[in-house]
Length: 392
View 1 (tube, rainbow, N blue to C red):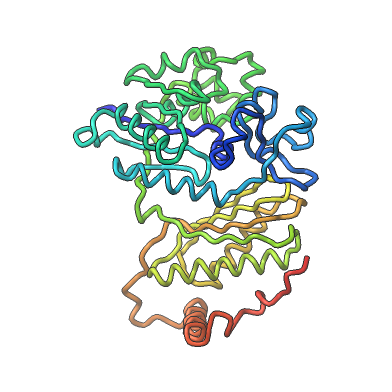
View 2 (cartoon, rainbow, N blue to C red):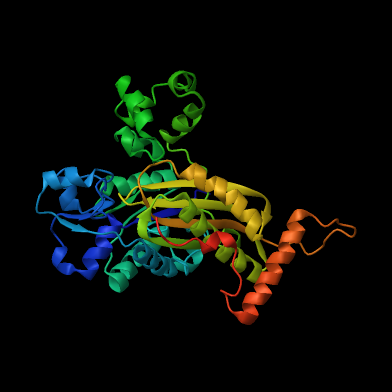
């Protein structure tokens, strides 16, 4: 049985949210970008700005030269995320198989098993579009296909507004005449290599065998071979406790590249996350750091925790290496986010004759600190690392 995957895409999501709050900006060129940073880049832009030649990631100074009178708004990342959460609440009634970004306006739903309750997938997509428009004044593009790859390409074809249905078995013929840059997962170096061989359309790239693709693309050849044929077995992951996340954020009062202040902020976030894990009787198995710079760019690094833990000291030691890995630029940092994923229950059974390990001793210290804070307040006892003054 063919899968039914719905892709909802609110084009230029940040701009759509901003113009909802300020309707007078609709229909005019608009840029979302941090102001006051000398190397700021465009985070998002309206369709009108796109038609003038402005693109995401473009230096803000260059965008201003294209249109000196263009309206520029600072990004409100936390607000965009809250709007995304409200949108997701509307989708939970139809299926537990839901994937989305945190603030990008993209939502995938697998409604293959929802037909008896809610009717064909096309009806579900139309109901969600109607609900988004009525409750949030947001008008998503939507598509229905048999996998996430084809569904995403379909919404790209009809952007900025519209809908597209790719029937089972029509994936190859749908993709064939399209430009190859519409395929998700192909990075800029991949597209440059394909252009060097004068392969601009998906139908042209299909003329190459897997062996021929391996010459320029090596291990990535099999992925490209499948994608240009519309093959994507990746499932839409269930939105459940197993995929829940705990996150902590730190906004610096002044942009900084002071290593001591960054480590202090990191420890405070680790402490917050580990306390939440202990309260939920959970361990974290993976962490991710996202650094947002003063120019609007971001860098990300992720790490698996082996073994999983809710120990402040153990997690901080791992995350300190993660910070070093993510911090690759000289530009000052404005915001730091730490995400803990793949939560798992704590082990109930302990070893009968277990020796007192270093981590067990640390767990005892942390438990004592928790008890002191519970009785005398959260500032009653603090690690020395967190007492560094907030001065760059």
